[in-house]
Length: 199
Image (tube, rainbow, N blue to C red):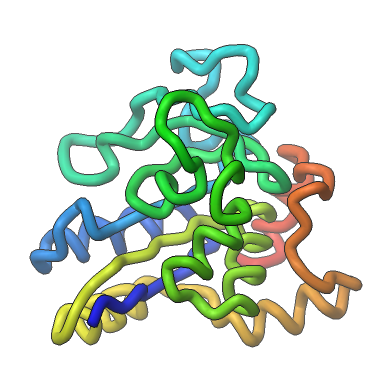
């Protein structure tokens, strides 16, 4: 049985290390997804990508960024409603985007939350993860079977993932109820303030 194992990270660096460790452990790149908020341009400078003027509209852009190999070489710059500019790669992104060829993110499967729940992620956690990405975080998800599920959970747990229950409580203290894709996107300043609070 295929299981979706997830980790939300406050920093892209931690998520990148987790993805590298998954790949080093033999989890294929095709089984891994990453969605990282890039509203502050800290992961890729939008002025040095091929992202067009519609980067904020929810259109798939496909700018390639990343490192020397594996999943992270294929990160694309796009926008997700309610989240804003992200760099992302993998099967979860394809599900959120829907049809290939510039379809609006969220056109299929109910957007980012719908793509996660379709993949077997608990709806409550999907809302927390989507909000976490909205506020500057990075989500890593792996679709794995059998012993690989235990291996992936262990690996994702090594790099200081966010505890969803604790983070949900923090969000609720501020009046949050659930992820809202029609909510205003966080500005670079709000993302930075949110990251400072978490670190």
